[in-house]
Image (cartoon, rainbow, N blue to C red; front, side, top):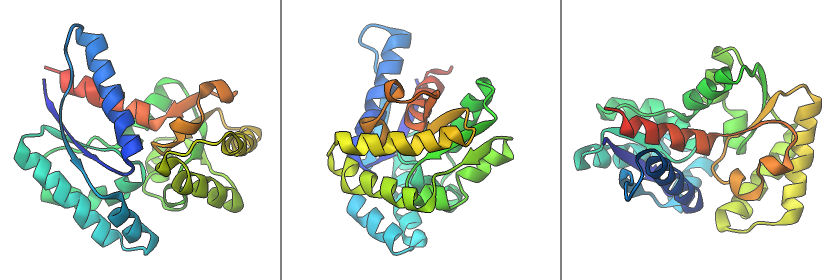
Length: 230
């Protein structure tokens, strides 16, 4: 089995979801007491968020690059970043390591194409929604991407950072997400991407009419399958 180098901590709640899904996938596939071989470097989310809020992506990239280098030295076979937003710094990381990085947007694109989705709504942090690093991979792959209105982006982003990343789950916030998703549905979306690891803590398929594509579930499952390849 290959060893997964997992960069986590952004937030730790989202990283815990990754750890659970990866190990559930391995156990389901291999049975018995089998579990994944994972080396985890969990960064301090407060440092990362300070960099992001100040627009200092170079510093954020340096922190994640150092984590990736440490995982390569520890014996990882490939890198998994447990955060949609921090895939923005993948181009900064790759020159420092020889390991492949399993990109979350590419994994999500592959799943969308398998389901013949042509137009999708994206729910994510404001960083992921207002920067192109994630959306461009989808659009270059032939997927039209719809995003919430500006005021909805701020509202959804505040719920992620002021509630979900702090372990707070509120019914009222779930209702807000449902209304935003309904708007994307009315705009012609054929499915909804949960493009943030914490969104799945608040809302799931049972609350949404359209098919849900939780990028965390997709990413973690594909990572587990990659680790089990001969």
